[in-house]
Image (cartoon, rainbow, N blue to C red):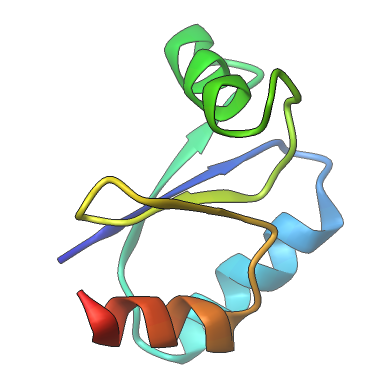
Length: 79
C-alpha cells in the first residue's frame, strides 16, 4: 500500500513529513501541485478550495492535511 503525498518544492512541513516517512520505511508517491494541475485540483477538493500541503491521500482514498508521521502510521494501520 502506497501513500500519495501532495507537496510543493518550497514547503517546509512537506520536507519534514517526507523525511519522516522515509525514515519510517513508509513508501509514498510525491506529486508537486505546482507542476501537476490535476494534483492541485485534488488538493483543493479535499481542503475546501485551499491548496494546503502536505496533503496525504491514503490507498483507501481518504485524505489528511498536514498530518504528523504518527497520524499517518495510525491511519495506515487502520486501513
